[in-house]
Amino acid sequence: MCDDPHLEDDRYFSLTLKEDYKYYTRIPCYARPFVLEKLHVKDRDDIAESTVYLKTKHGFIFKARIYNEIDHTYFGCTSWKGLCKARGFEESMIIIFDIGIFQGTFPHFDQDIWVEIDMIPIFPPCEFLKHTFVK
Image (tube, rainbow, N blue to C red):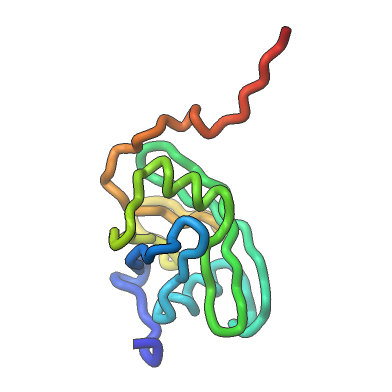
């Protein structure tokens, strides 16, 4: 499968959440070259860290980090954990991502990745804001 890099409809890839998904979620090897291209990582063996904006159709935008290492690329940061919590992700769920390299029906910007999930969020976006209290 990794010998044949591809995206579905030139824009989608999916992954199945493993046991440690909240801390470390690996991007499938068949989609890795396209994700790295979108993030402007020139060499897939470069050790790099990139910011990406994970967006959902329900108005959530999570500023997340994608880490690239010599043999794999993965999500792994507190914002990724927040997205998992807000959506009630569970082990073995299949999540679909739209990286939109090839412009489709809605605009994509350089660091946007759409998370295609139909689940209604279990936490509203305000749960993830820092609250400041003034006395």
